[in-house]
Length: 214
Image (cartoon, rainbow, N blue to C red; front, side, top):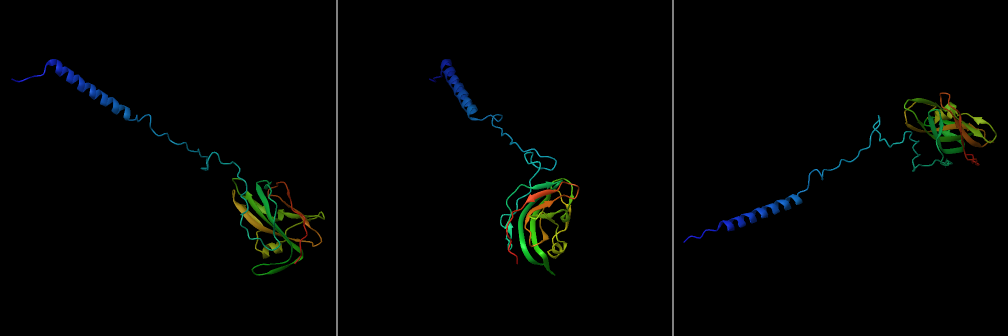
């Protein structure tokens, strides 16, 4: 005799299978993350101006500082830190000063001072998108006697330092020496310069001190 399940038993078994399948589908759906909810958010990028610089970059960069590791020359002193001086589009910072030099030597010549040589080292840049010209003849040293001393052409040439920078490149930095033949009985107390395009004459104060002559 063959036993067959009743219709009621078959219905109960089928409903159990369907309930199990529904539960498994619900668990799988809960475990599978939604692609819309986990899509990575693109990181924000700084907007760039016409030159490719970040929008947060300063519009007018200041003159770069003098290098920290500098080999000081005999008698040379570092000038106190100060803000850059500006005449027209020329920005300049006095860096170091030397006085009391009786003689200077170049690669092919030796030059005796009439009085004493003073040497100032400066850093210069053109704060503009265009080129400009810097003329060393537009500089001078002032003294405690109230006089103004122009640069020494002979000393500048012997030491192969520029008498003019043309062109001063856009935002380029130049660092060089300027030599002056100063009477021995006076002491320098300032440095003046102006641009080559009618800008105002700017005065930078220099420390007053006794310089041994040799």
